[in-house]
Image (cartoon, rainbow, N blue to C red; front, top):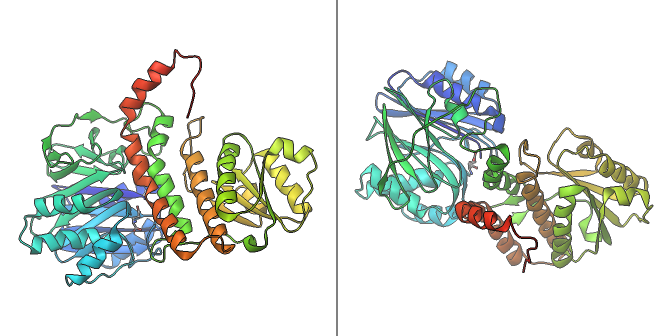
Length: 466
Ligand code: GLU
């Protein structure tokens, strides 16, 4: 769920595409690639691992062009490899994609039946094939692109180039952010304004469902219904090297909107969408007699939700404790007990002390942690990471929902290991969870209505939740 850069340029773009990708590196990624229109033909270069590997590839086999798209990938569907790295191509079409296409299997099956063959394990490749399919059926690129968007289900951002129209870059967003940067003779596309910092400060933040056609120095924007719309041009203050609030008023608001990405990324580590199965750290779930769940603050609330899932799905009795209480009350634990610790930082002192206590009692331990190099991650027998990225806002948002995501996967995986659910239920649960990034995106669409209700509520003393 990582980075997109696109340039409809007047000058050579390869170095700038790479530079834009470097500015998006902070989001994390496992491979990188780009496609440019060289003399009207798509040329792709891709590499697993760091951007430096892509640069080496480009040195070996240089490409040149003034129109291009580029991508850093953080795999959700298919392992990190050059083959799975973006851009993906079908005939004269190349695309880059961030996010998840939920219905990629159905779309891929249809396209295979129509004679298309796929070369990657990604969900993304269907986008290129679907556009190419529509063009072959006689549609103009604009209609093929829009037609494809209408068929995609999920949270995503996409950019595309087509050899038949070598003077433009197509882009769209639905659930994942996308920014258009405007300059006099060039137009840019980026996952955030930071990607474009240095090239232009004039940006348009595309709205949900928007798509656009970028040409040098101009852009046409359309809404989800395909109607041409005007979007405000704003002045971005993004400075490379600094965390950027983008279009948001504060980091907490930005992080609320990063939840579809954070959750999608976390899900991708515990769900195999091809086999529709969970794959979770094993701490001997099938022989566990009890689960001691320990955390502090917000992470403890995530644990309370997790308790419901472990009990209802996996049928494991759960005791949830606040770590500061747990460590001082000398709870009784046996080797058949399992202990689970939740902490965003992985350094919460009371949670760490509780972990050490449980280990001393011989219980197998599992940490749900956001920071890989943290003490809790290092000391637990097994760790299930959350992939929320850094959280700057004080009130937890995406770190909390990413914890819930990991807990839901672990509870479902444990249920399967204990024979409490069958393969069919497991497949249903994977599907339902993979739909959450999109559904959260839909809930975030209600922001202005929520703001109205919130301002009404500020003057009330009590609220009753049903
Ligand atoms: N789901 C796509 C993949 O696995 C895109 C991942 C991303 O957002 O980087 O290739």
